[in-house]
Image (cartoon, rainbow, N blue to C red; front, side, top):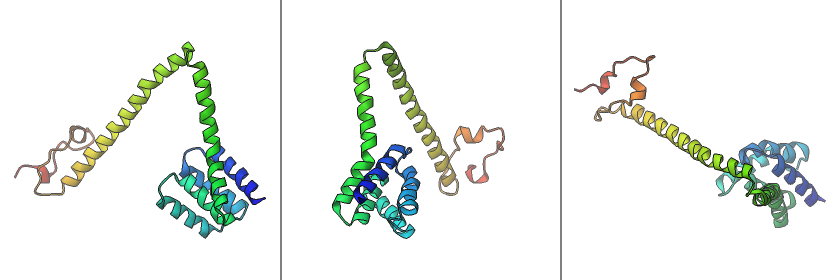
Length: 173
């Protein structure tokens, strides 16, 4: 009976836990701690800590640990791990099946040809933002070192809201 409850609970968590493992944690806590009372809040906190330390996705790690803790059996861990992964696995299978069936459709081809440059540009924009943050962080860290002469990047000095004068520490000695 407990195995069927675990399967149903973790199928629901796998189906509705959008946003990754950390987004699933509140749903897991509600089901495991508040609704079914399988674990105490302290035990669940330990589950989260152990799941963060072990390699792999936190949602799957916590499902494995909860399944083992509830049933005191490896089969509980196996059942919960499969149940939390099964909805996304089935969804990917369905999407790939329909994609293979419809890949010659002119509308699908047009959508896919538009998605490729869009995804590349999103990745490039993210990397550019990371680069600018890194430059700003490097400038702010290096301005406190007296032995390094650093010119600030233009986007820090060309801001009309900031003073055009360089900090005295950056001026030539």
